[in-house]
Length: 288
Ligand SMILES: Nc1nc2c(ncn2[C@@H]2O[C@H](COP(=O)(O)OP(=O)(O)OP(=O)(O)O)[C@@H](O)[C@H]2O)c(=O)[nH]1
Ligand SMILES: [Mg+2]
Picture 1: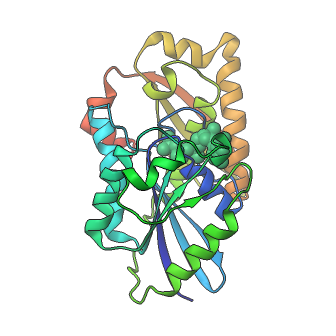
Picture 2: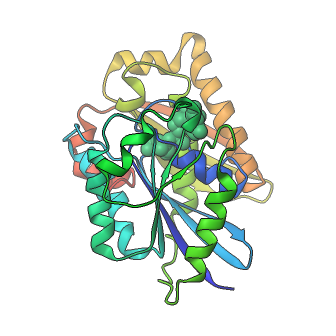
C-alpha cells in the first residue's frame, strides 16, 4: 500500500488540528479556540481508498512573536516541507493573505504538490473576504470548506486523491518514536488551555516526566510549567479542584487514544522565562 506523507500548514487558529481530527475521525489533535494551541508537530494516520496517509499536524506559525519558542514552532512546522509528499495550506476568510503568500513561497520553492484550502466559509456567507484571495495569492485555484459545517469536504478528499495518484516518488519519511508522548503532552495542554484564560494558555508548557507501562494501568507523571506564582495558584485552584478537572479530562482523552487505563499525576512548577531557555525548550520537545 502506498504510504503518503501529508503536511498541513497554516497560521494559528485556522483549523489545522480540526482537519486532522476530521480526517482521522477521532480526537487526537489539540483543538482550541485560542491561538497558538498546537506546540509540537504530531503524526496521525488514516486510510484514503488504497492509500495509507500519514498526516502531520503542525503548530500555527506566529507572525509577531519573536521569542525562542515562536522561532522553534516556526521551524518545527516548516522543516516538514522537505519530508512530505503533499501539502495542504489551510487558511480562513480574512482581509489580507500576506502571511499565506510567505508560506506559499516556501512551498513553491520545494516543488511539492499542494492544495490551498480556505476553511470556516460558514463565517463568510457572502464570500466578501474570499473574493480577494486570487488577487493576493499567486495561485489559480483554491478550495472552500467548512470543517465545522461539513461543507466542501468531499471536494477536498477528491482533490487530495487526484494529487496523490500523480505522486510517483514518495518520501518514505517515518514518524518520530516520540510521537505518542508528543500527542499525550498535547492532550494535557488541550485540557489545560481549554480551562484557563488570559495569558495562561500561552505562558504554560507541559513536560512528560515519566511514562511507566504496566500490565493493567500505565502510570504517567507530567509537569505543568508556568512563568508566575499567580498562574500556579489558578491552575491548582481552590482545594486543588482546577488541577483535578484538568487531569480528569486529559486522562479520559489519553485513555481513549491508547485504549488502556492510566494514572495521570500532574505537578505545577514555576520557571520564569522558559520561552527563551533552549534547554527547557529541548526538554519540552519544542526544539531538537
Ligand atoms: N466557524 C468555524 N470554526 C471552525 C471551523 N473549523 C475549526 N473551527 C474552530 O477554529 C478554532 C481553531 O481550530 P484548531 O483546529 O485548534 O486550529 P489550528 O489551526 O490547529 O490552531 P493552532 O494549533 O493554534 O495552530 C477551534 O475553535 C475550532 O472549533 C469551521 O469550519 N468553522
Ligand atoms: Mg492546532
